[in-house]
Length: 146
Image (cartoon, rainbow, N blue to C red; front, side):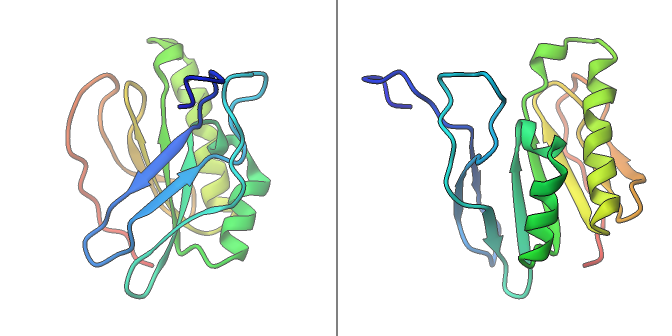
């Protein structure tokens, strides 16, 4: 955050064993939020032999962004989302449908982690293969094949 100008970024920090450490500023933050600045480049992290496409919050709803990540070598996607604004409404499930759709469009696994919403793993066909209950802390373990 830049307190002087009161602007912020949607940021993803990623740390993986045997992988690069990555910091990514969302290039497509939530529209009309005048305090959130737009990042400049696609988000990637590299493991020893795979490229991971990073998505921040609203970006999982943007099909052209997941397509660009895929075209630029992403083996799978990780999406970090803040679903607090939806409370316990059907909005939790509705917004997560975008992640499922874009995962299947690009034939890539997607790992989705949220603070209060739906945390799950999607296979390349858009099917949930593992999920945590909404509004519960936990650790989700699933095998992905990339």
